[in-house]
Amino acid sequence: MKKIFVSCGEVSGDIYAGDLIRALLKIDPALKISGMLGPEGEAAGGEALFSYEELKLMGILEVLPALPRIFRLKKNLTNEILRTSPDCVVLIDSPDFHLMLAHALRKKGYAGKIISLIPPTVWAWREGRVKNLKRDFDFCLPLFYFEHEFLKARGVKSLWDSHPLVFNMKDVKISDEFKKRFADKKIIALMPGSRRYDIKYHLEILLGAAKILSDKKYLPVFSIAGGLSKDLTEELKARVKESGFEFWEGSGRELMLGSLAVAGVSGTVAVEAMLLERFMVVIYNMKRLNHAILKFLVHVKKISIPNYLASFEVYPELIASEATPERIVLELEKYLNDPARRSEIQEGLREAKELMGHTSAGEFWAKSILNSLEGE
Image (cartoon, rainbow, N blue to C red; front, side, top):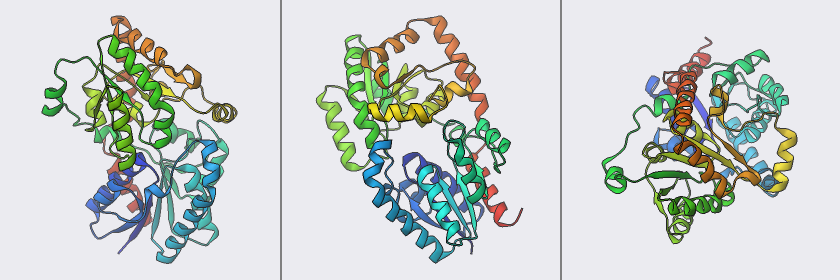
């Protein structure tokens, strides 16, 4: 019986872990899959030896006090993998932690396959991490074709077929509950994020935008991400409710599909909005010093993936001091009130979607991993 250890460290990584585990078990139900997982990975059939909540992703400055805890977690995972000796280790996203874990495993003599699912964004910053990928990993499974080409050009073994969201989102639709609750309303979806850090630094900005939108007769609706902890969910709901606005605890994708436009924190949600062909104002606030540090580290001009896939900037990006309620509403209205601009952006979104692939990434990942274990 083959054993596979899967590790993820945040909500989006857990979703991809679920995709992978379901596909693996569909091909070979006898596989034993365990690791550091969240609810999606467990629901798919994996055994959570560690909770993905043990790895908290934070801003640059916030990581420093947590280093002792992070190093303990790395040691515990390393010891567990060496003790159980799985045939393969799949490390999903959370690049700084997982690069460190992969190197620790190799130094301790682990000889099984190590695969990076969603490798570090070396195309955007810290290209020096390419050497870590070449040294410690058997191959990478990136999300985007342009990442795949970038890695191959630098000697990293990379395999790509499509983005997992293409298959996962093909059946998104508006429920009867949603229609009944929001019938004929001019909804603007507000997406404050799925991590405490995101919510901490963006909620007040989005609440400010909601006030302006409400005054302009739109209905701002806040998405409550399903992967939030219970405490954070209740905090977020209470803050939105006491401010006089509505929230939606169902699918964030459904909320976006039922909206005229979207505003929210940079991340996977922008790709989801693109696949739904919904306009989005992308924001990313951060502490001033974090922003100053990132300016030295990042070598790209855009932070939103749809703006890389399209031939022009389809989503406005409001970073740091530019991320104000007034500016968010201004960008939304530029789109909503200009038919020519709307048409141009919709064409750009369709163009970008075509570069995402058309098949099931989970099945491709599973086959690639199992083939590698068979020596193919």
